[in-house]
Length: 249
Figure 1 (cartoon, rainbow, N blue to C red):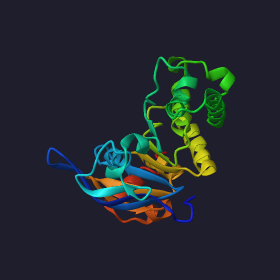
Figure 2 (figure 1 turned 30 degrees about the vertical axis):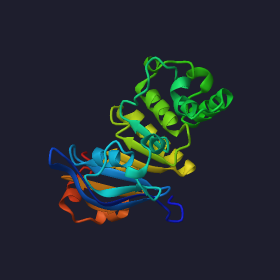
Figure 3 (figure 1 turned 90 degrees about the vertical axis):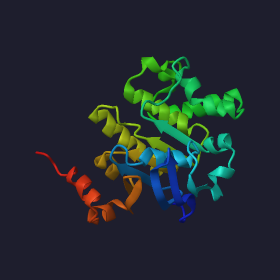
Figure 4 (figure 1 turned 180 degrees about the vertical axis):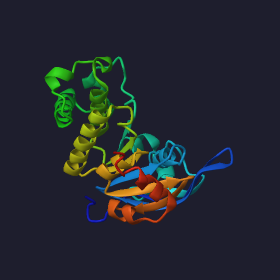
């Protein structure tokens, strides 16, 4: 849950254009510490672009994004990204690193002591449901898709960043594994109190994970509210997504 309404990230009149074409336009919203904000929308609606503006993979063409009260343009990009865990659909694990080396990567870059890294890796593997004795020395190709995603989450959490960005991390998984990981991640997020920004085009996933849902269409944020508020929205795009919640049988 949000921590005393403290602000983690702010968007002030943010537009990002490429080749004079805006990919997102006039974004104004706030992300509170400890909340799970789900960015929902169709392909090409601007969800991932919005997320990449948070960790400075993109810089605003107009307006500003504030992280911890400081515009991202004033952050050293390496320092900023080490405060932000990042999980993508294919996990981005290094294939020639063991699970232990993948999870311990950022702590090692931060010059943690080897023993401290080993303790942290074991702690995180246990946290995401992978026994360290069984998995620490395996390589990514020796894991299932669901196990690789768990390692990706563990790696993102390794240096204890306050904010996690997750770009359709469970999208390539089978439905049963996906539901298991959604429920596991919801438990983890609530237990650890992390601020999470999670991109998806799946409304069922949004309703499982969200404390708030931000619906994007055509590069604009058209609805922002709790799942209960989203259910009451009369915006045509929200209504279109809500149709997908209805059982097909």
